Length: 202
Image 1: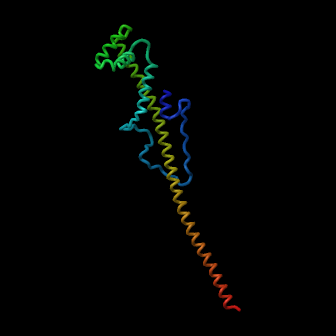
Image 2 (image 1 turned 30 degrees about the horizontal axis):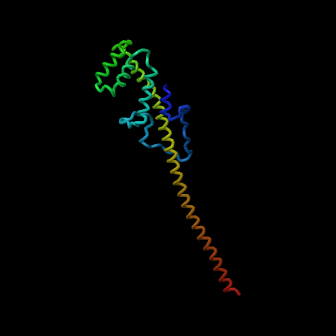
Image 3 (image 1 turned 135 degrees about the vertical axis):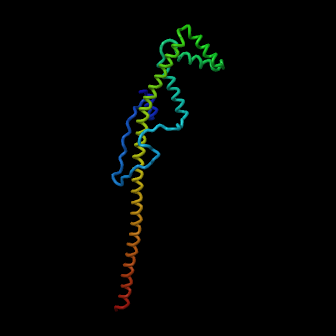
């Protein structure tokens, strides 16, 4: 498993190790079923990927470094293409660049068969990296989806609790109003009764 894949997918610093996400505890009261269709329960490959070009640049650099580390001794596909690309600014004709690069590397043992066989080796490296990426990606994706579901359920439960508390607050307000009105009326009755006592009883 490439360290680059783990660091990029789990968004950790280079010196940190990715840790599995801990499940978020849901409130015991008011359980809510997650119904957000925007977040699937498991990974499904996007049909129209939205490429972040900063990431794309990092991926290109990653594969360049991977090819460099995997480069076999002696000239092969990697040296040929490196030479072809190095001449791009000076030699605009692509066919001329390929012919010139091959001619320069042939004395050191480069053959067309070696180009083809080494290119197949690099394709194998890409395929393995893709497989490792997909495996790690699914784990990271499903972890994020599970966290989203849990947080969504908590949010829905909290919304329910907030609604219940708002109803209770409103009810308390009515009770306060009723109590204070009754208290004022009782107090006024006593005061009125005292006025009558003082008026009628000598």
